[in-house]
Length: 164
Image 1 (cartoon, rainbow, N blue to C red):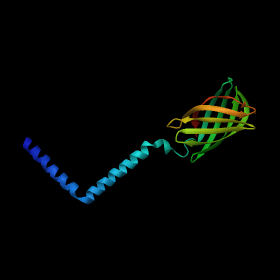
Image 2: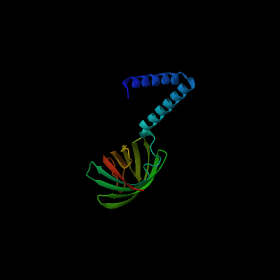
Image 3: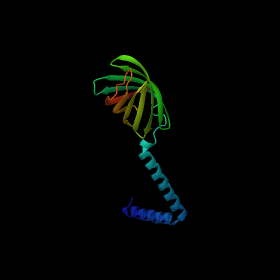
């Protein structure tokens, strides 16, 4: 191929390109495509806010470690509707079963807030969930006096998704 032919081909391409952009309908359509691409990119980029509406649904295994060396293990069956979470958990304190508890809370993006209630006592869990919704961790405080939860306890917790 002759280098001069390449140049003349580039010039021809440039002429076609200039004509292409002078047609208003084509230019408007191109801008609409760019606008739609930008909106899709923004939606995907903020994916933390558009999580699956049942991302927390299923069985979760919680380990709760207190400032008094008490270890609580919870096996929770959670349901999620929108950003609201509800469920039930079996609770063990220092490897001894101590009943069941009700769970309620919310998920906003990856920020998780749960309240676990057993008889006259409550745990308030605050934390975050990883982007794949398979692990969570945070801190907690307690109030009331019950079988498993002691008033004034505080500490850390972690949870792992155990399946549907």
